Length: 263
Image (cartoon, helix red, strand yellow):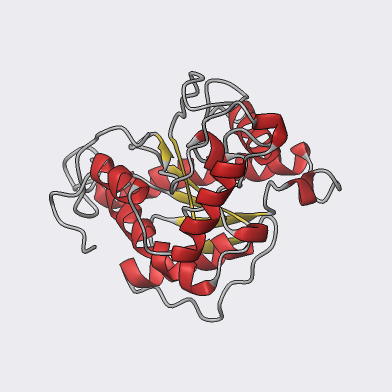
């Protein structure tokens, strides 16, 4: 879909939930929702693509890999109801981006402050591995989020696939050609535009957090860096947009949609 002035977070939400672009993923998510995990046998699984979640005025945009089969695919909210979400939202809470450290179900009262969370792929993939074509199918949703999130200053990529997706996104939306191509690493940074910086982190998967490859201390440090970059970017924007006789003002960087909730 080509972004228009009529686009909005509510329209994006509806388009994601109704998406049927990837037959393999739709079949897999439906099968998981029908068979369920024994520990969640009483739950009514969501079983559809997962919409984004968070503050539509966010300056921090977190991009993950994909929903978990018995996490987001069950609860209907990104990074909710699994150990990855436990780690992520606890960190966002400690950094001041969330009002509570837990994310259990869609109606648990979680609110994000200055933070928006989405994913490279919007459906749970088998073995947590979306195919390149499936990532490409979801890329238009990232495009629309880039345009709708008019204040984003930091894209926080969880894992190498999200890192690559963010670099490709900047190329599509801003014509950014990063040479040499920045390599993913925990704590890596790359300037995507004058006012948007990409920051990388190891993914918050159990494979990383249970083995100690990613610890809360490591995660807190990179979130603190994100917070600092947001402040630095705000200072740059104010300096560049101040007239010779007037006070700083926030520039209108791109067309944007309505400020409807991103839930």
